[in-house]
Length: 410
Image (cartoon, helix red, strand yellow):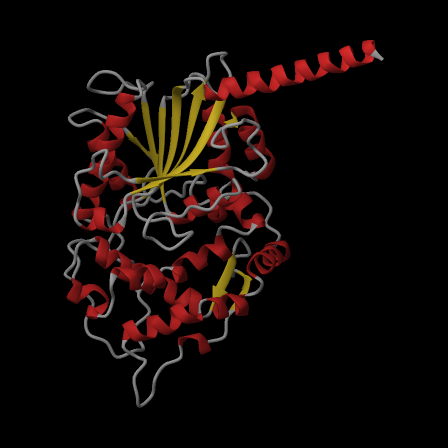
């Protein structure tokens, strides 16, 4: 009996030691080795016909300083300030030293849209002021499979499986409309069409989801599709710093804009977040990121400048949802970034920390000079089924990259 008890105590002691070692590893000081960031581009002018108002009586929309879809000077300056704040963090962590980062320190790759290229340059102006930083991208007119794989990728697309995934994720497009009925009523008020003698009912338009005409994507119709862009235009008016009399024709407050933005966020519940869609929309970029995370020779900071759909799809593939401060849940804002840090503990083990970082609407609108007391908000994201550490913000790096490779299609 005594021998069995001593044996049992020895097993317990070994197990306790192993747990203690694992806990000690994650409590010990960690060294930041690498960061990968996926940004949404900065504040832009509205797209052509993005606001669904042509069939409604309305006052003119505000004038913008640039052509439709382009990054505005205000948006560029906001990104420059975000970059400057990020530079200070990189230097404080010891990741960067010296005035200008070398090629091994920083790499920026953007989509081919003019607003993403300009956003990459604006961010670089803050990250490395006065330095020459190449902004990598494909040639004008080319489609980059990292950012828009559904347009050109040879990967098989099963329309029936995609629709089934959307229906399972959303509960059906009619249910989506019902969930967003309050936002649609508020949108009618901002549009000014909720008045007698013939008040509008934006939710009355039937919603459908089907395979797109090209057979390579899904297509949504109905009120969410129609008014999601309008909600985004109203938010852009505010972020651009337009007078409040011009934001939603004077009928919108910051709180109104946050409530309306659920319509824009809901768009990603069809195009980006259902598992079948996330695996494909985010797949090629996710696999590139996994390769960078594993490669010891990769740049210390790798930045991808894309779109809200890219951020929504990658976060869905990882099993997390971004919620930026003072924005609608699940609606990646201009200048927001999904990031992954690689950290090394004292025993040489590597860990990953996932986060979302964004300036709030007031900070962008007023072009705040960021400081420790007034910084972009940082949301730590815990990947389900990934963390094996006592610190739940950490995930073994190999576990994260294996998870990406299992889920991504590219």
